[in-house]
Image (tube, rainbow, N blue to C red; front, side):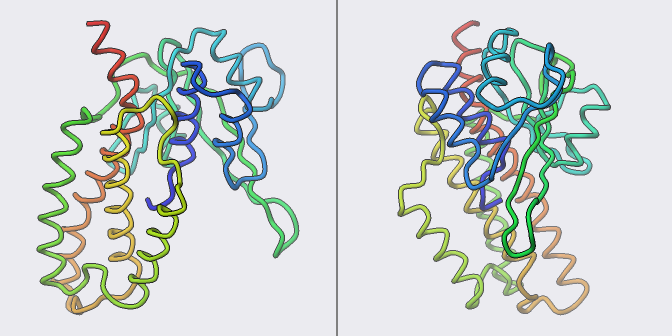
Length: 262
């Protein structure tokens, strides 16, 4: 969860474009990031894949006013609203983008191309029908911030007792790399997002980094089966809370718009 999901970049910069805050070229450049190319397949009226600039313009013409993010995991359809076929594709990809005011969703298919040692990443976004209904389990931005702070406190206490709270040279190197990226002025969200959303997303990404480190780099003092089970029990709800917070941050633009309509 250290790196932002592609669905987050598409939704954030797509929302900025739909709001007229950035140019199409700037939005596409930010969405593609370090990938080689992004294409969109399955758009109504198109017989094959098209580029992001055309796709975003076509979605606007089809009535799309904003974009939401879904980050589902097994047993947790976070941000999804159906139908089952779309949910299954999104769960396989572990992410998706849901269109607001139009019954479309986009699921990324990521592939590497090119010779070994010089491969590049290509992404195809598949446009599929979705059910227009409230997304599953998405908190408000305020709820997400409170939940994330509480979950982090509880998990840090448990993981510290198990000696797996992200200590050691590997963890320190990863955290240093994260801080270096932040200090280089990485733009966490696109123009138009409230400062609170940026704060929540940054905290969720840091929490995601610590969860990944605790899962991936050694067992620390957690050498017994019971201690490892305790570690997993501590990490799972924190990872779930961090994903919920990410979705809340990316979807905050839509949340604010809906509040004004009520």
